[in-house]
Length: 332
Image (cartoon, rainbow, N blue to C red; front, side, top):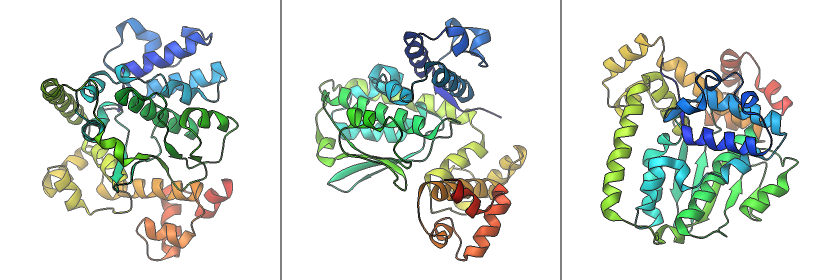
């Protein structure tokens, strides 16, 4: 089954950051395939498990609790490879945001975000990363990289954003305010970043409409290649995670993936998957997120993941996870 991948630039930046902190490369690459193949032979993308292991090693070896923030602030436009170049050719920030929404899986196969613009604020909301990493590291990396990219695009090094985070303040909470500004809130129901909607019309100094078309064509080709490599099951999971709270039926998901229900069902069977199992997996993820990171009543959480009856939700959640909702909430 195809695996999720991460751009090689991100791996190289993390490796350089940790080596500058005094870590030995051999220890940083321990338990990764890069330890065998060597950095010199790295391709355009690496498997998520290699990035995850490298990040675990770097966290342990550096002892830097704010490593996610440090890494994110190294993620400039050049780090995002061709998509970063495409951002720079846009005429305004709104066009760059449109490209990001359309092609963000080029930056991370496991990244799922939603975007809203109410005319006053623009808001990016993200699901918890599927990387097996500390929760704060994943959010720190994503949000600080987003801020640093916007600063570079707009040539506004002092730009700040409102940041909501679905966990308690860590010991290094002051670093968040140094990076993002004073509008940082912890213990929120979900993670998000906000900035003024007026910025969407801000002209980009590096705009080049002719090059933009060429870069977008290449982004489209690369994304198609990635999607062809992805199994239908993986595409289904990404889609269901993005449609949080809606949970469409199987025929609707098949249509969204441009497949007939019959072909969709057959492809899942070939992969040893079933739609119901994938749906239950995502509902369990969402329910666990709410149990761990919110104080919502159990009846509300049950309704949000598709149950009208709390007792049915309890039974289903135990079937999905082998644990009761109370046990999960008590731990957090």
